Amino acid sequence: MEQRILGKTGLKVGIFAFGGIVVKDTKDADRIVAEAVDNGVNYFDVAPSYGNSEETLGPALKPYRSKIYLACKTGKKTKNEAFQELENSFKLLKTDYFDVYQLHGVRPEDLDTIIGPGGAIEALKEAKQKGLVRNIGITTHFDEVALKLMEAADFDTLLFPINWACWLKNGLGQSALKEANKRNMGCIAIKGLANRAKEPKEDGYEKCWYRPIFDDPVLADLALRFTWSQAVHSAVSPGDVRMLQLGISLVKKYNGNPPPLTPAELEELTKRARSVENTIFAS
Image 1: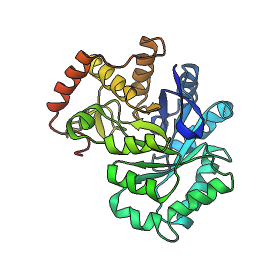
Image 2: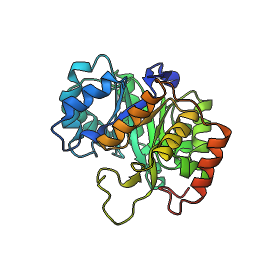
Image 3: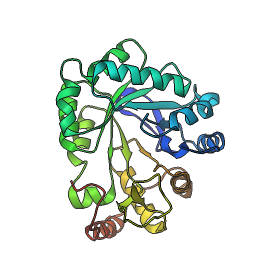
Image 4: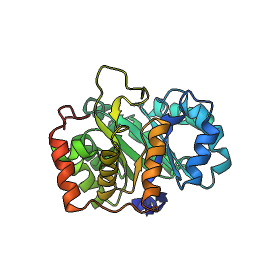
């Protein structure tokens, strides 16, 4: 699998990463993780909000901990709460450090608390100073939030939706990714294999709150290659093991180095994006 340097972190990561929610409520975590590692996956991203994923992923990763990079997050808003969550994640994931630790899913209304006195941003800075985490990062679904957080602290990574439909139809991610690149931040994409907002009917992919591209091989190929073609270093798998396997199969299809989209392919994908009525994010 092609590897890229994750910005100023210096970490050499595979272009397809492991979304920790994949192992939520499963007894097959050891096998799933082993298969991913065998196929070149070396970046694993998880969060306390993903059910029992931390508890399940920790033991499965133990044999590989020195060979992989582990990223975790805190959804807490204050310094004390964030430190408590960090310590609990260490216990559950059977580790004493994280390669990347991130503010999770920051929303506009969270900003004042997070970056203010006693906010969670202080916990991340202190954890890095103490060597508990090697790099600190941002995760959000809002360009304006990412930009404000970048101004508030010297973050190392950005995890953001870089999705074909949202980017081509709504422009989502363009300003955040541009600024992150200017700052030499490691850029990790999410939602690369997302199709659209989920319809009310059950689609069999309950761990994905959006409708993943599970039934259109051509679109899946174009969509993930579109994400890889942007200025990102890795793309995280959706939260279903079948989608993890689909992403790995696309990497293998191109012998580890998926090519960028041709002009004709980009035109086709743009046409498809315009026809998506309900993108997973509006802007």
